[in-house]
Length: 185
Figure 1: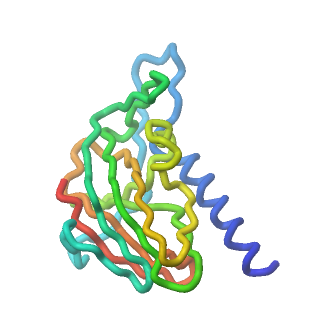
Figure 2: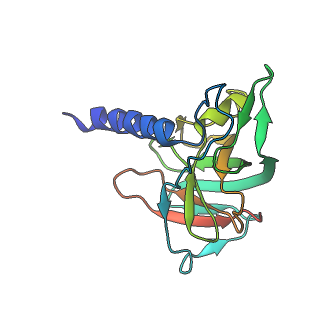
Figure 3: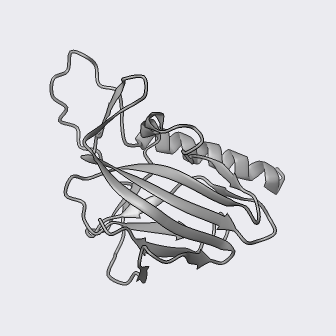
């Protein structure tokens, strides 16, 4: 199989796993209490991370990241159609950010992660994208060189999550480099 065929397959598998183990699942109408606890994707040691402040841009190889704003949306969001999406882990955080590719090749954003002060890692909450317009949301986006993009990304985090940081990368699947931005929340 050629290399350029492998990347779309990896992206589809990643997207399906995020959907399957993501932040929200429908609850049958006759269920009054959900006792299932949804585990974070991973736990990392946050002690050694070099975290940069939110008010400065951060470059990881050829990819420039800038956090514009962060908002705590609470335990549920209401879509334009009136549907209510409840947070399964605890609360929704909305992150507005800018990304620019200073390299020569197109890169792909396929997942973002926030990490809390306990080292719990939370991926993008795909079901909450219904809350945002398709122009704002960024589940699988090609980042063309020399173009600025602004996106919103929802996360479903634990209710006791504090000290959230955003993991930003060089968007390279083969040689992934990471850096961290303090989200001030």
